Image 1 (tube, rainbow, N blue to C red):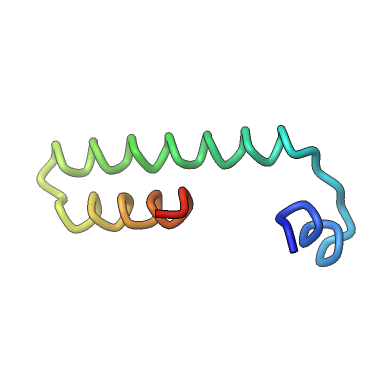
Image 2 (cartoon, one colour):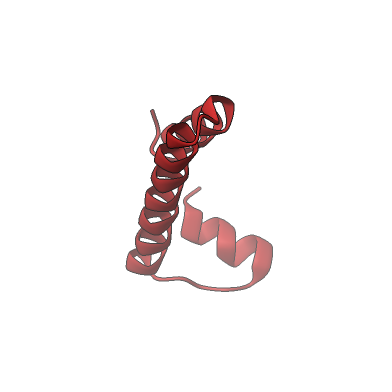
Length: 60
């Protein structure tokens, strides 16, 4: 079952594919920023967690 089907079934809402992709793209970019900022401040563990989550979102 796809993301849009799950949103409709679980929450009774409909979303367009482009809206979902835009949201996920923004979330992935935000996690990438967290990763870079955390590592620049020496927060290696936080940067790694952000990278792992981003990679899971991207299917990697």
